[in-house]
Image (cartoon, rainbow, N blue to C red; front, side):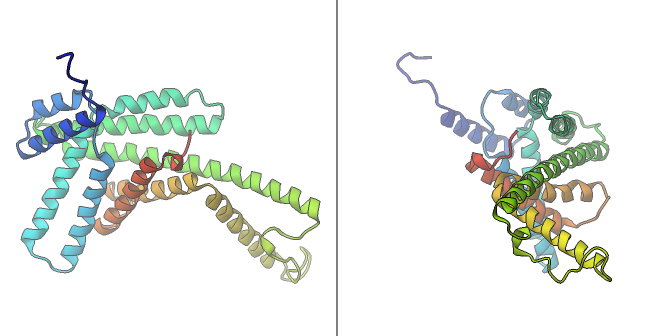
Length: 290
């Protein structure tokens, strides 16, 4: 390299890879695509491509429902397929990243968090590995790959990963609710107040009063819901993670045939999840840690 020329910046490398990727999209060559993904350039716009893919899925469902022309529907499906293949291309090597994240999670002090996060990352690594095999089959590198079988495997690992993520969210919510409940109890003992949340116990009857059992259960349930709402409102990263994982859960459930949601629901949930992921990239403090 000429010493008089400044070294290329990260943004320059992103622009270069974007231009090369656009050229490959018009005339893809499997070996050249694989070489491109091995280049040490940052992957541009992976979450944006995911949002665009699920937006196409939602749009295609809406066009079909309103009787749009078959040619337009075909173009939308082709665009969705190109975006899906492009995402698979950009995800080559993500298995190694997931394994590194699993190695870091092993050192967490909390046993439950260590188990949930480690197992989630291991399942994500297997999901990305199956996804790489699918990309090889769709790009022509491995034409004999049974794409349906590998797709089912990938979505199964994806489902296990999401279940672990939601288990981790439920565990953190439980810990925060216990902390909030203890803090409320201490405040009430110090001030001599009533039930948290402004709900009065009068008129509900004692445990031995006739018909007092059901109102007591309803009151406890209402208090728990109010406590849950307070915890989620005061912890936006946890709220976003719960909503994102819950939205993502519909995708493997539909693909595996465990709960048929339809392309409209899958597209909407995937779009919402992708927007939340983009939001965590824009505002890093909204990302749940560890």
